[in-house]
Image (tube, rainbow, N blue to C red):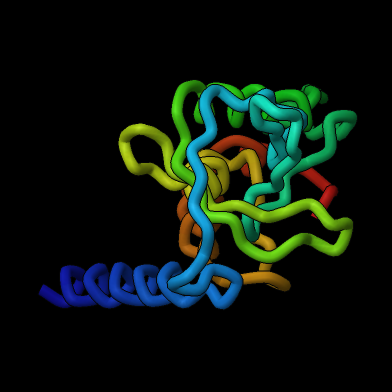
Length: 159
């Protein structure tokens, strides 16, 4: 019984954190993007060439290398890009938030099955939550680390 109550509390906390995103007010503009061109593990462009960055996630740069638990070095930046490309295949529904410091608009997107792309990337271990922006994906990171998913199956240093 105690573990059920603890699980319920964690779920409620995650929901509250996800809902409390000051960058996404009730009057936030929404857009639909069809099969975006993925640039890296957190950035893509729409059909018109406008660039967007996923809200509150940090993925390794394209040239980043990581080491898996067997000591093999691999291109984790390319892997993160490929995973986002897979997740973003098709129609996305996005809310446009504030611009990042470099002027690129941030977006919080869901796929056709209403799954949050940022959450999926962090939970799969191919991105980290950007705690300077939001705590929205912290529980996803804890899950990825516990399961040793993606980059968590070894060492990475881009933090």
